Length: 437
Image (cartoon, rainbow, N blue to C red):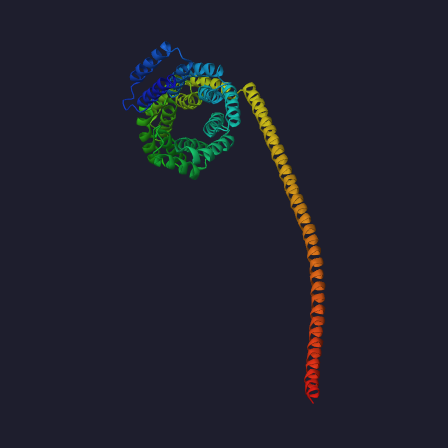
């Protein structure tokens, strides 16, 4: 207990530090770096593994939005430390694997991301932990989103929402924003708008409103509501800067660049596309690099074909790193293996349920047999009792008949005796006068 109290206080301090960083309204990177530097100093001084794990976890989480390489470094430390304690603290290891998956996915390392998440999901399920199970589902959905497999992404995020809707409102809000992204990519606008607006209304969602506004802006752009799209993008930019979310900031600026292309304001379009490209490059966000470089290639193709070719090559290199044939084959193999594992787990669960059903049937039959034996024994006992009672009844009736016969004889005897006495009396009365005479 003496050890756990300081650890709890220190963890609380880390959480407070992180949210102070995340909710900074200045948007200045240096203030965040200084805050993280203080945590790094604490990590260097820490000697207890539990404290090191907590610090690495929160530093990695803080870096996710603006420095994926740094996030990957500290998430790797989180995984390594947790792995040594997985026999005693399996959920800690599951948490670490889920944490590092975001950095992998953002960098386009989908194989590593899915491998980590399938392990995290398996551990969470084995330990019946709802929070870690939902988190693994949600992050698997995020990886499929990055891979542009939106149907599969929705499938996993729906599983996460089913759990979080009843156990964790804050996580449910994150599930909804992911679903809004996926439905927007599939051009299912009504569902995307529903989830985006529900997130904006949700007071438990503490990660800024830039993502919902970006989604609503993209939907308005597709529907040619350009003024409305610009209004949504403008609302999203301050929040993306305040939360240092460079991935969403890149997407918003790319959207604004497309709007300026529509209005033939090409210089403004180049400016915002360049901002989007730099933000995506800084955070190693491959999908953002593809989007921004495509816009820049189109803009420069009009008068600077060399620059256009440069950005086109960047776009193709990023695409190949994400969706190259070899990469997709490995991913498919990994997914097939996980599907097989899931089927085996489901088959084992079904076999267990079937076994329980048979046990229940046999138990029911045993209960019925016991009841039948009890009823049979009770019936036999009842028959025996009835026979005894019938014999006793017959004996009683016989005795009663004998008593009645004896009673009749006694009455007759009494009558005869009375008659004899009467006769003797009469004779005596007659004899007395005769004697007297």
